[in-house]
Length: 206
Image: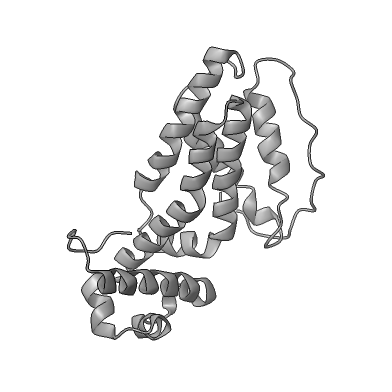
């Protein structure tokens, strides 16, 4: 979450930024990007001038929301994964965090995509450490040796692509994380899968 000036904020200004980002997350989740900026300001308890001083447009605000959610939901999981000595478990922790975050934040991610606010900056903050974990696992013989760095973003995209087929709030995606983990193994070292969930009626994006 970065202020537009790039300069350190006073404590009261930093609190305002935090309130604005939290309010935007709540408001976007309820009404998407059609919600006017003054409604976000009201939710945050700040004036509209204060909001625009920190975030001159919705794109900058959506990016700040995504950055905050990444910091809250993904960064702690990556830190746990780095400390985990079982490399398979470490990658599982990271993938579960990514798909869980995508599941919880579908409205915000859709809003960001609609206005072109989705960039690869946050994505690579995830892909690179996971790639490091996979290379560590390859050295240990935990993962197949023909995996390459380019596989990581595609694996995540495949997993996130299952989300529209589940009811909101379902964790049916965990079955497919386990399937992917088994596909990364060098031989038939497989885990017991969670039960399958019914496919929700939806129109997939092709």
